[in-house]
Length: 147
Figure 1 (cartoon, rainbow, N blue to C red):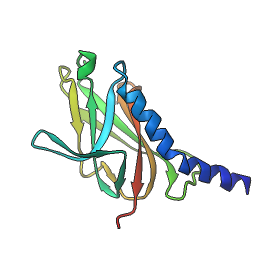
Figure 2: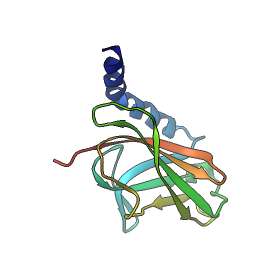
Figure 3: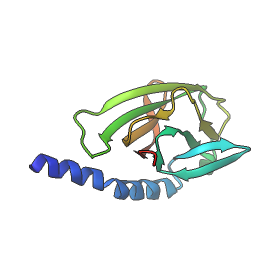
Figure 4: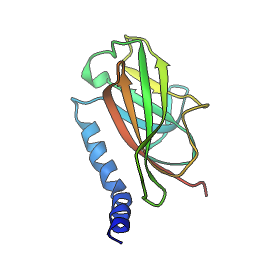
């Protein structure tokens, strides 16, 4: 019974985690990493941390750091950390998607419709990695069922 309480508490704490995550992103000394439904015509469409199942776009913005990314490859590591009921057994890395980037970029959007797709409701952690496996940013994402 205690285990179920902890799992439900974990799932309900997601909004607080997003709030604190967004506050950390607001700091000027950290890369801004967030999600939107799509990126079209130079615009981020529907920025959020909660989406229904489907394809997403991830954004990495370091313009405020007045630097560039400095590498030619980045990867997004996608891990499911809880299902739609807040239950989790073991965190499982679902995918590692590699993207070619220009070392001079300071703003990047990642869209890979064949792989940056979330089919199951739940809570996910998405990390931006430089090679070899050095985390530079990350974010939490809640996926709900389509209504």
